[in-house]
Length: 531
Ligand SMILES: Nc1ncnc2c1ncn2[C@@H]1O[C@H](COP(=O)(O)OP(=O)(O)OP(=O)(O)O)[C@@H](O)[C@H]1O
Ligand SMILES: [Mg+2]
Image (tube, rainbow, N blue to C red):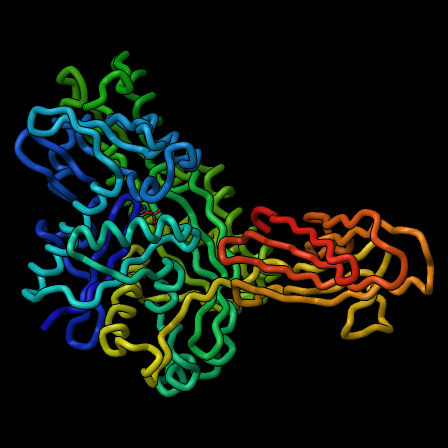
């Protein structure tokens, strides 16, 4: 029988889960490992993916490609600065093709080839499919792939096309929603209560913060939970404080140490640097459990070994600024949806660097004692577990409309309150007496896309002469609302005026304001970037 599969598409590692004996299980790859490197290598004979690509990397660094999760569905010119930086320092070459797309240049089977990120992803998906099939001995049925909450529709569409090309069609879920599902927060309050888990608290868990400390950055998301329905209220990411950056700090420390002892600069040896990086990644992981680590690289460069010792305290010292920066997306996400730390009912941690004791302490330090911290899951596997649960639900309820159990959803919600102000003041049709200075139109937490129309009346008591009216589009929330845009109606005719104003806030945060003055039929509109 086809098996339901969930995949966490990580920028450094992917995890694969299958639904097995009524529960999600993270499975081992062909090498017996539960995390598969997000890496593709081109050799003279074949294309290698995952662990096999990582293993051969030192002897084939120019043709071993990583970091492509951030390239799919994004034009070269639109790549985020951290991706541009990553690609610039990568041993493989990334270029822009004539259509503006990013491509990597490799040598494969003796020929120079230009490869798009979609092809790299398709290789990866074929490989992940084979992991699930080999482990379960079954074909893949429903499959769910988890992606960052802030991935655009274009990125999502491009990934789904890659899945189809790889013979692995999948549905998508956002990482934080998957994490919340892994912790059982997609269940209704009644289900949670009847399971005996934290009965008193079940119905109160309305605001959940998910912080994913991954290899490629920190993503903090506030979710609102209404009786098992999960919706994203705000999400913020900082791509400059991922696990890779912590590892890099240790690499720099070791490189300095080696130079001091031998006079050799490991940054001059691509292969030596690669070996050191891998060793440093293991040391960073070890330091989450032990008080000290001893990175050792045999014949790191010119046949000379490298060995040093580092304590956890010294390592934390090397990274002191990163811990502060790691807090920022958490604070920004809460601010974006107007939540104070004491209003967060439960905090869930995901991602590899959530293992670090200092990271755990810093998150705990942001919240009052009473805040519940999700426990019982390996943070680096939480996303794949949630994706697997979603795949099993899709399997059980292929037609959500007809299903008894509503499928968990990830409804994006408006992170801001938006309104209007008319200069000179008009009155809202609903309350002609009020003549409000500021009229609230879209509320914080409203499901997106949000679309509202309001009517404004400007009584001019028989005044003659033409008039210029400005309708200001406002972001509300602070004492003095900020003006996002203006709709200017110049020289409107004498007499009473009547405006019909529409505000549309789309999922990706683009706001459109459109207004019609009914008497003159004058129309003004403005599109405002990310609100
Ligand atoms: N025990 C540990 N202690 C410290 N760091 C760890 C530990 N385990 C893994 N890491 C680090 O976590 C990172 C990988 O985490 P994870 O698999 O969550 O990232 P990812 O999903 O690939 O990245 P992203 O979600 O940003 O795309 C790596 O940088 C790795 O070095
Ligand atoms: Mg991840």
